[in-house]
Image (tube, rainbow, N blue to C red; front, side, top):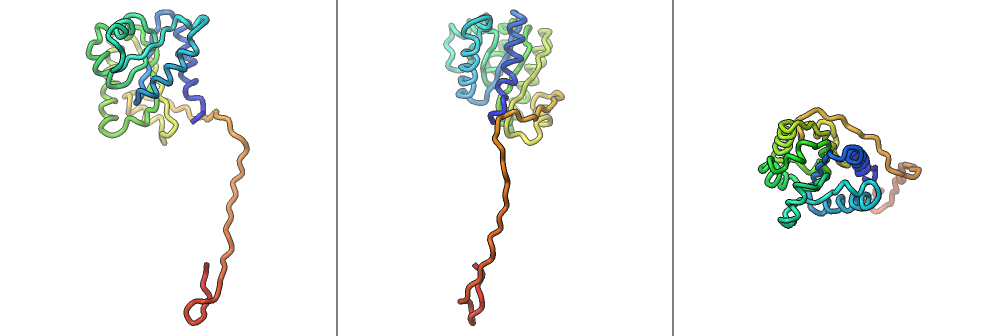
Length: 200
C-alpha cells in the first residue's frame, strides 16, 4: 500500500500511448469502484497538454450504448472488468479488432482478488485475451498489481499462463522505526491454597 503501484503502470502506459498514437491499453479491476477511481486519476493526468489525445474511457455494465460504440472505435485506454472483457469484448472480438491489434499493455489491478473458482474463470478469460491479441498480431505486456500477494511471480504466472517477474522493491515513504520487546516482571502475591504464592 502506498508504494507507487499505480504510478508503476500509469507512467509506462501513458508514455507508450503518447509515443505511439495508434497504441492501446486495457485496465482490469475486480470492482467497479476501483476502476472508476483509477480512471479518474488517469483522466486528471490526461485532461490537458500532449496527453489529452490518449482518450481513456470506462466500459462496464453502466456504459450507455452510444458511449460503448465510441469506446470501441476511439478509446485508447479502456477501463473494464473481467466480466465485461469476457462478455463484451472477447465474445465480439471482430468489433474490437482496433483495440486488440494495437494492444500494448494489459493492467490487472488487485490481482490477489482472483482466487478459487472465480480466479480459475478469470485465468481462462485472460488466456483467451492473450490468444486473441496474438491472432490480431499483438503481444501486450501484462502488469499485475497487488499489495498482499505472498509469492507474486508464481501467482501472476498462474493467473495469466505466462512467466512473470516480480517487482517487490517497496518505494513507499516511511519514517524511522524502532522495535522494542518488553517482558514485564512476574509478580507473586500470597493467597493461594494453604497460603502459597500466586503468580499474577
